[in-house]
Image (tube, rainbow, N blue to C red; front, side):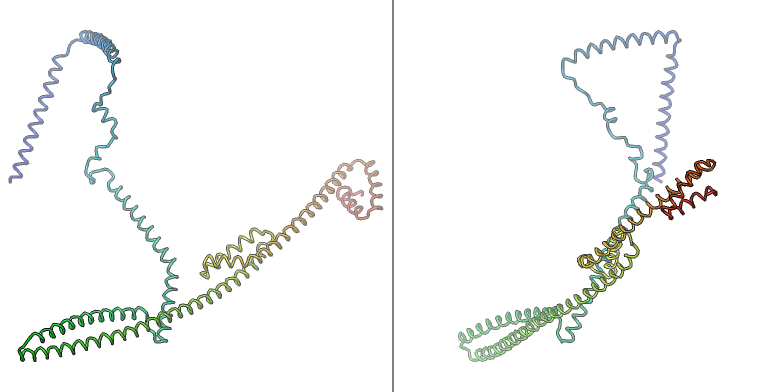
Length: 401
């Protein structure tokens, strides 16, 4: 009820304020309408205002000339400050849910975050893929080592270390107990010497015996525990030696496996080279590039490291060089043959064209034909091959020959 009353009161105040503002506006416009005059009067007023403005301008110029003698100061007015400040739209000052395109901007931000998360996930996945094989290799080595240790009835060094730490703690506790019992024995002996009462003496003697027996037991336990600890230490040394030996064996196995892989890779690359030298018979550069690609591909397939792959490439270099030289020789030979054939073809073509031109020239000129027939007879006697060639060439165009 109270809330309703407050709302009504607020509405009443706002309406009354609006009415007052309307009344003020009407009064202003009423005054302006009363003040309206004829057009002539307006023109006179405008002229007077212009004269006043000119006078004011002259005065201002004089003032400026006077002010030039002193320092010139620039005053920062509010308009200038507002102009220099960066323009912000009216919705900038609203709450975020009232701003324009807030949903679009929020979605954009979400997309950006999602993309970043995806990039991170991919990177982690790539790293996992890269190191997965190495981790698996380590796990296999560990499993093999444990199996061999089981066969040799040797426990892991970590279990022995745990037992040694436990024994050290137990010995430290028992030593502390022995120290306490020793101090108690000294106190009881001192009391026995001091007391004169026979009953108390008997009681103290019995107590002293029990404490001495207890201290003997503790001492024996300390010694036995120390002996056991010594045995465990020896076992730990043996376990370490066994571990080192197994590691050595495993390393040798890995070395043998790597050597086998390298031999396999070299055989594969060798066969690939034999194929590629036929594919690229005349281009040594293409052949070398193809071989390099095949070496890389083979190394990747057989999981050979870059360092070892480089060694394989060095070993195969001599063969690649030899094949490249053969390809270059073949290419040079082919080029020489092509050049020779081309020259022959050009020469033959030129002769043919010349003969055909001559035949065309001789088509209706019988005197010239008779002259060249005689030349041809001489040529035939000198060189029968050329004679046949010329005779055939002339005969194509001129049946009279």
